[in-house]
Amino acid sequence: MSLFDKPDWLSAAPVNLDEPGYFELWSEYVSDDMTAFEKALIGGFCADEPGWIFVAGYQGAIAHTFADEQFNGWTAFAVSEDRSPTNPSPGLTGRRQADAFELKGFKTWVATSRHVRTLIVSFRCADETLFARLAASTPRLSLNHRERPTMLPDLSQGIAEFDGVEVTGDALVSTRLVSEFASIESFYVLVSLLACVWRFQHEADISEQELVSLLQTARELQDNLSDVQAINAFKNDCRELLRQVRQRDLGQRPKWQRDGKLLAGYARPKPN
Image (cartoon, rainbow, N blue to C red):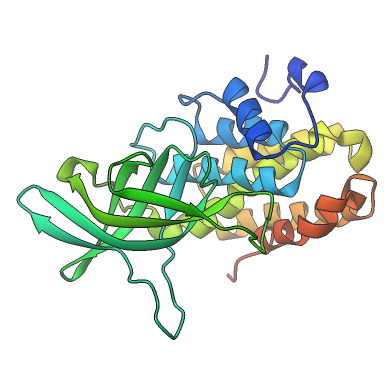
């Protein structure tokens, strides 16, 4: 099967998925050794709502940003910390101990917290920011889940607490692309969006030819995401596609009505 053929299994894939259902479908058809583009594409085919489009694109973005790492299942890139003006939870810091670091503090947004297998976290150590990879099941690391998240409420979202978690020096990851994560994430979320719209092509009333053409463009761009002019042209095409989807049956579904505007943010062009 070509990368740009609709998978045979898609016609029987379930819909109205909750997070466990989407995780199960993802686990069946998305393998850990796939490329970042393939994860976003096939994960997008599995998706049936904006929340799962986000997850698929997010996983593709993490795989692209940390291409030297091997992942098992879903990963969260946890950098957010408490910015409340009164009594904020302390951010994550590391104390160097020989060839290891002792991590203490909090990360306040962990995506897919109920199903995440791996975390990549930022932490301050002395006067530098480092990034480390660790299993979500690591001792002295706990995940607490938000009860009623306001953004993408079908997606579990948690707070990670590190109570003296030890990570060794070989857990540190490359920071080469970290500063570009937002742009990388936008690109892969749009790849997942195109795959999902292709899955529901009739409800979206978008031609297969247009969707395949946009995905082919995306595949050519994946190794040149710094080409702002080309990326903006791709985003503008995706914005127009989203505008059309909002007027069709797919865009009228309740979860698309609720969360579809978030996808439009990923299609916003970058300033030149």
